[in-house]
Image (cartoon, rainbow, N blue to C red; front, side):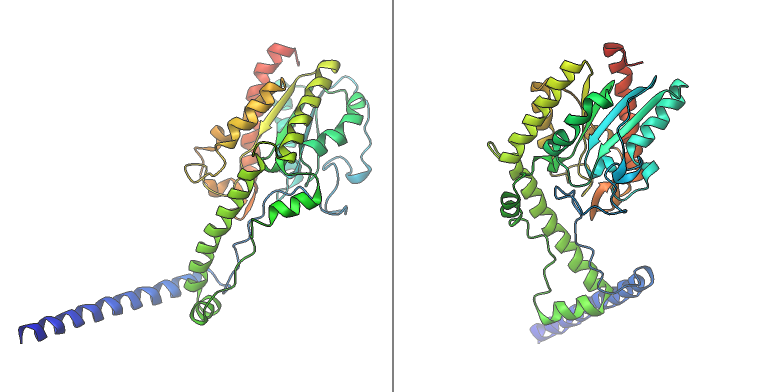
Length: 334
């Protein structure tokens, strides 16, 4: 009798728990339907920086803000010229042209120094890496005649140039979203906001882990892309010494997570800095400057489009401006 009574109470408690969970799930679903109007939103794709440039088109000008693909290099007059070479981070993928850090930096310099004779030329294109940047910029450097060269560096600049090698490496990423694996998960994903939200959350975690692991492999000893990136830094440094202008490497984090213990590339920043230092190039690592910010404010789309937001571009420009004050005393920039 006593045992039966205990079982009855246990059954009642379990029923109450199940009912409570069901009510909570229903309320969560109702709330999500008001705040997330589209069912089954597939937001797991992480838009990482590219090393394969998009096709030339009016939407992807080679030199943004300088007339598109028909940009003509002209000799500087009385201006002090800063040339910034880079990839989609420098070009400003996902933001307006005047929000990209080269333009913001130029405006800050002119405002601070009260001079119009300062120009910042952004020599950048989505899809470039450090070696491609060197190959593109090197023939034009005598004409550009910079007083300072800034190299915008992204973690994926160590990807290989050979397309076959690149595709082989990228096989391990498997970043495409997996289809739900059971009828119940499929139904909840397609018909409930809560199911879609939970599924996308775990898919995002899986995708991010594979992307992080992929980027880590790029810096393994002897990887061709990393070897070429270091070669490019050495060549930039040698040419800068020949033409008597300083070089600054600006290292960006990838904005695919919060920049705290979640950030998966922290160990790579010292590796990149050490390589630049060996080449005789000064380094500005932007990671410490971003660590106090909410990571959701730093990405174009948190945390799926890992390119910098307008805020992240502005912070980069501010940090470069601070470093320029130090460089100006060393190299008489102004």
